Length: 458
Image 1 (spheres, rainbow, N blue to C red):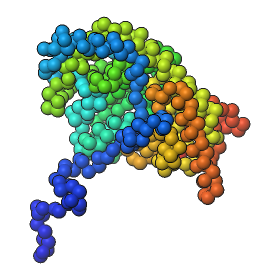
Image 2 (cartoon, helix red, strand yellow):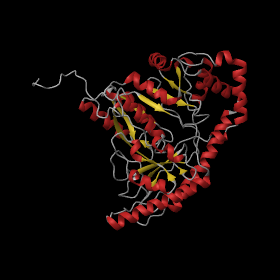
Image 3 (tube, rainbow, N blue to C red):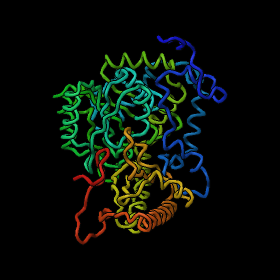
Image 4 (spheres, rainbow, N blue to C red):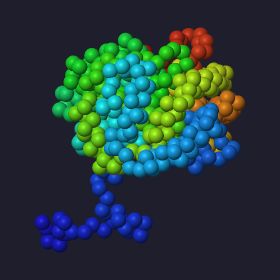
């Protein structure tokens, strides 16, 4: 140590002590924490003049609110000693039984209530799984783009995300295998693959039937754990629920489920279905984190499943979302300028839109908000800074007429951006066509590409 140099353990004065006097005491894992692109929009989308195509908020007003309210009131008045008390760290046994009934709709017929851990939404389930499996520096494979909430969990665990490309049929098995080979060659420790196979958030695409088995086969061949996050699986518009990955392999797949999209997000009830050895670790982790999931909300969901026509309610939700999806796609077809492309979801909440070549959804966002329309820039769904040419549009919350007006405003913003680029930068706006439009010289192209892709992928 040179004369006059500070002692290696001396106090480090924070750069801005008046702003945050504890800045030098935070754990290293907090340094990269930041608000998600969606959270950053909250103050904007709450303004009544703004049409929000941003947040994925379910249409809870379609629930029979009087019946649900009476049901919860009766629970408290009749079972207050149980519903207002501490519960089990694993979750209410009756609710876990009913969760197995729900999963059976997607082909998971061998699940036992003893393998189910109830969580505070599937977000806590993902956090628990990540805590149990990931050390700092471990690699998590995830689709590119990927759910923004998952990226936040992986970042908090100091894991590294390696994106795997998708196309209109979901995750590409060959790309997954290539990523595994490259990670193995680099000496990386891959802990699991994180995937949203049904009506993907944000891409809106669904993993095809042949690819489901291919991915399970790859997991078996490479000793890979798969985390299947499935909040939207029962909200399909065109067909019955697809058979889950977990239904194909009970030891390689950990399944995350949620009642946020099929009942109520405000109750915050989700679950993890995992092999018994993993379940034990998850229960210990949840007891350390929250002691136990809230009893009242668990009893409310169990009573709802016991007494209400929840299957018919899901059908009502799907019809409502189908109408809003149709309004979105029809408006995009009619109004978007050439060079704009998008996915065509057959369920769920989201459309993934690719801007004409040269446009940046993050830079364009303030002008969109000024035009009273909101979306989520694609950069929020990548861990590596990619995705600026994309945006996520959510159709689940606005009424169809609001959606049409929001798309009209967005189309005008994109057209203005194209005019600016054409005038000042002579940017080639490309020749890609919007999905569904006639194109004189080009065929349809998929638009869900790999991280850093600047073109459509076959």
